[in-house]
Image (cartoon, rainbow, N blue to C red; front, side, top):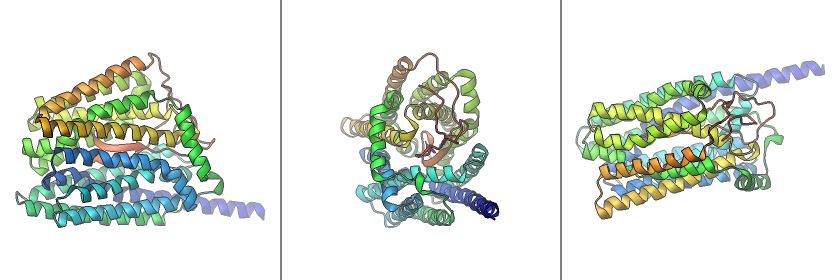
Length: 463
């Protein structure tokens, strides 16, 4: 009788997990539409509202810094709420509210910076703070299953809907013509669409079951201890390189949108098409990066990708026609795809499994701080000294080059190439780099996990 009861419980548990995984695919597609149609065009809307360079630099950097810092609170908040699903749902519905705020700003033509900065900050706080809890949730649902196949299929659908919604939004903005009021109304409709789809996505999360046991939960004291452990035991070499790289990168990235829309006077359809190029390239490249790293080594993948990243902003100046920019954006997708893959692998190996989520949050906060410094510094140079976008782009290449020289000397010549499979979730979309992604990691590693998942308990790549 006991064995029959156990079998029935196992079957019920399996049915719940399968249902949850199916719902998660729907949730991901709905979320991708929100990112593609709404959040991706916040920078373009800011340009249309008349915000200048220093304001754009703040908009591109400060929300990410605050969101990355708040991610460290995810563990304690889950402990206080008593369940990770509660944190995910609260963050998802609040993120939908932030997108509704974008709609109100566009519909009423609010030209002050602080409301836009406030709702964008809420967006990124929600996007980042739910990450560890959602990663643990998905780890439970995919336990004992073919995670690689599932996440590849889910990611594929997500990329398709992200691309379709983004290009469709660009076409809609292009159809609005040159009337500023019509453009702002179109932005408002896109954000309203994003709000509806994020609301639907959050509703899917509410329907999705969570297979959670009490032993998986950390209390507040354990969460704080994990932060201390990360600070004292992790290796910060790769994190420091990424912070230096992000400083150089954000001398240019916040200004690519106004450069294309104002200086080059591209229409929104062309702007969307150019921004879509690195999305497609990164999606096509990602499955090949694991075997390429095994064949040539992680060090070579990182260095060659970083060299490509160095050249991109300078090429924006040299190849300023649409065909030229297509080539540069394709190179950007290749370079950033390889760099993100290699750097995430090395970051995962830089901290102990029991504090990896906290370490990644600290590393992200460090990079976000240097992004803010780089973006604000460049904005001040342009505002007060009259530096051109071309000069800032060249300076960005120089800053990225300094980071490359530093990491070439810091990385060992021989590196182990056995690596976990990476699974990434989309956070945002940037015109110069494509999708902004973060690795899905489990804050409570289980011994049953294996080296073929990005949710493993023991990292294989060593920095």
